[in-house]
Image (cartoon, rainbow, N blue to C red):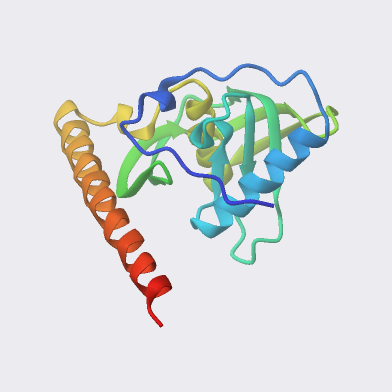
Length: 185
């Protein structure tokens, strides 16, 4: 298994619409396993393939504290079962350290395929309903910040750009320190 790099807002690749999965093979299983490892390490509770620059309709989730109930949703379709929307504070691995409330339908039906291509359906409410809708947005090239006001979205964009600049400045310093310690007797 391998940790995959997670794309960060405002990376334009996050706006790519994912295509349906048509081949259910070892490569798909490996991607799902790598996505679980990446999600757990981040740490997060959901990850869409689009976030790791694989633009296929694949979502992995595990809402448990013990990380022992992994769920895979392939080519998911979400249907609201109510018009009632509830605000839920969301965060995102592609928008680190940012949280805000988003209104979403409180109860949904999920129709999807598993890793073998077998169809399944379930009804969800609470955190599962919110998480699947959040991850489905990624497959459509949408982020939770798109639900926020233009001012909030701009502030988040600036915060993420500043974070990227800081990280890119740290990388050369870390590389230089590694070279120095490698060449020291």
